[in-house]
Image (cartoon, rainbow, N blue to C red):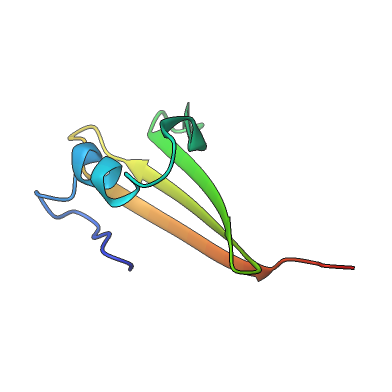
Amino acid sequence: MGGIFIGEAWCDKDYIKRVFARFPPETIEVGERNDGAEQWRLQLVRDGWVYRYEIAFGSDGLVRELRFSCDAVNLN
């Protein structure tokens, strides 16, 4: 989805950094899930929409799981 592929050898952390290179590095929140997997969270607000990404990496550094959501910004 959106250029992010699960389990592909070329889709590693460096690739993900390049995908989101237009955004400040501090925009990516790096953490660890309960199962020990490294997880990156990213929230972007653009054109009236909030985009949320959660990307989990396997021990090999490749994308293991991707969650995405998009909601309209409440302008009230």
